[in-house]
Structure formats: structure tokens, C-alpha cells
Length: 282
Ligand code: SF4
Image 1: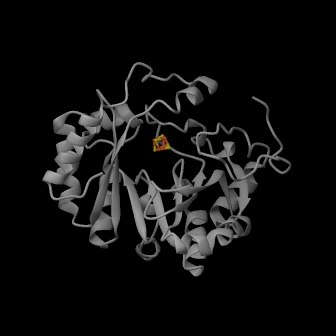
Image 2 (image 1 turned 90 degrees about the vertical axis):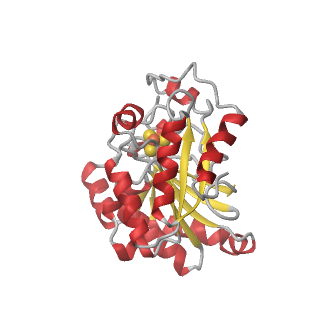
């Protein structure tokens, strides 16, 4: 893999989809500059912008995919977003300009802006500033997060985000560690805090055969989500193999090669468990 000078890369910020493999686009920027930019939030690292999404929040959305993630989910379909320096360094004003281009269209399509990743709260100051800029343009905002860094945002910052798409991957600590490399506690604490603040949440749950599809696992997440009182809907996302090539290209050890996507019956059964707890599930 070649190392590009991030200041001269010709790769466009717009991508057809987040499944484009992108690496090393921010390498070469001095560490001190990166730290200062992240602390101030005046610059962020983005894998790409994509437009026209109908699965990352209400309506039709523009999505900014950040780089940097502390999880290592076995099923991650964008492992090139794990490393922050794989992203394109983007100033706040440039990112804001991208949003401005779509402002009228997003309104017409009852859509908005979603910040996803990677884990967007690895760049929490940039996230807050970009959401603030979006809201100043009256664009609906959504944060798609693994939830483990929620304590980086103050209550008033959280209240400014219109919707949180919260990934809940497993509630069992041991299985969560095996699946993601991280503890579930901070994620569940963040979910409870959002509930206390009465912030709208959509739960996202990836159904992975052999990992998260047993009745007990789905039931635990369904009961937890229902207990919160602020979960507007649950998206059951079937595991797929579209990111497998990235693991190969990045020479990462992909452990789910032999795992088939769940059947439509299995997805429907998981949805039914969420619905049985009084939640809307799709
Ligand atoms: S939290 Fe998301 S980006 Fe991070 S490893 Fe898991 S699936 Fe990938």
C-alpha cells in the first residue's frame, strides 16, 4: 500500500459507498498537528461522504464516515476506518460546505445528516462542531455510534443531536469482548444516560449467525432496549460478507469467512422478539 501525501491526494471526499477501501490518506501529518486539530475540532479525518442513504436515519441522508475506532468487531465491514490516519484530513469549513450543497434537497426528502464511522466520537470535538454547523443550516442530525465514548459529550451537547443510532452488539460481557474486543458496560451506561435525557434513539443490532442470533441474546437486548423508554425503533441488520475483501487487502485475520448471512426467517424471528417487547423492529 502506498503512502499518499494527504495534502495532495486527488481522491474525492465523495465515495460511491463506504465499501471503497481507503488507506493511509492522512499519514504524513505531524502527530502534534493531528492532536491539536482533534482537540479543537477544527479538522477531522473522514473516510468519505456518501449521499442518498435511506438506511442511516430518517429520510434520505448524507453520511460522513469518520475514521478511527477502538472496537475490533469480528464482522466489521469497514476495517479501513479503524485507523484514523487512513482518513482524509478535512477542515470543519470544508465539511460544512459539503453539507451546505445538499441542504435544500435533504429538506425536500425529509432527510438529514448522519455522522458514522468508524466511531465518530473518536473525534468528538469535530463531531460536535459539525453537528452544530448542520443544525445552524436546519439539517436534521444523527450520530451513529458504538456508544462506548458517550461520556465525551456533555448533556447539553447530546441534547443538540436529533437522533442517536446506537449499536448494541451483545449484552453478555464475555461474548461482547470476544465479538468486539471491548467491554459492553460503557455502551449500556450510555444507553441509560440517553434514556434519562429522553433523547430519541434507534437501536442497531447486527444479527450474526452463531454469535448473536440465539434466542437468549436477542431476548436480552430486546428487554434492555424496551426498558429504556426512548427507543423509537430497532434495526436488525443481517450480517453480510461485503467487507471481507477489505480484511484480505489489509492482511487482517478474518474469522467469519465461513459464516453465512442469516436467513430472512431468522431476521424476522429476531424482529418478532423485539416486537414482543413492544418495540418497532425492521
Ligand atoms: S464499532 Fe463499527 S467501525 Fe468499529 S469495529 Fe465495530 S463495526 Fe467496525
